[in-house]
Figure 1 (cartoon, rainbow, N blue to C red):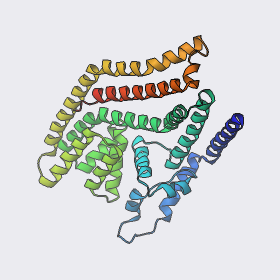
Figure 2: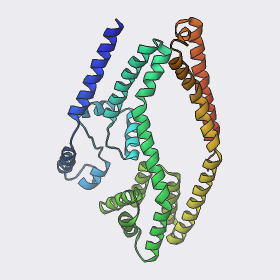
Figure 3: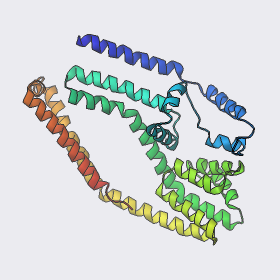
Figure 4: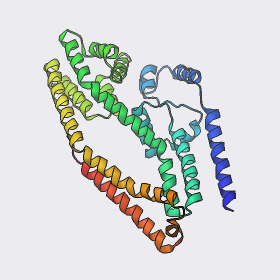
Length: 324
């Protein structure tokens, strides 16, 4: 019976991988679909927006799993996933992400069940493997935001110099799009494109905050919007903003150095019991078999997993509890 279940899960996973590989679109198909989307937009919508501005707010669908995305679109978690994908600048879709996570969950559950047929172990193992695509997406998102923050101060300096040279805010954004480092260049270039298509500067900046949820960027956007409403020397305001951002980065770097030992301790303490258990069973096969078959041993495993998770969360809370 067990072999039949594992065989069924293996066939299901192989079929899933084959479907994803066969339905994946080529870059040429993506380009054609984007151009066709521009053509099929009506000349003028009921609310008076032009086709170009309507395209800015049009949800783009990639891949051949549009039917699944249409089903998931009303739900908040799907909208949150879509926003995370945009923030990570990833080419994946919500449907692909969910199906990939489901397939990995089934594979992880089956693999864990093969070695330890215990529900409270198999389900977390499958969940950990199923969360892998979301973890990779979060890593890309975090890396992109950090890269943006690293070049933001220099970009603001360039923006202030352009304003002192007599350029408008939109013209300064164009200069940033041409001369700034990535990913700031592409993001400010998107603002310039939106301005040319008629989108108000406030809306363009707020959309930039949605794409790049950075505290440093929020300081810049707030400074520009306040100056737009109240007036003043924007170049001088940007100079002060750069000073604040650079001081925050300096303090954050010092905090990272001071808490490095605590983070390393947390990783070591969380992984040490699991690594030791695996090593002991490799050196002496069957050493911990009583934990898997005895009722008291299973209870001890559940209790140990719970304590490890609680300890890791407490250490993480202490280390990451300092904000600037």
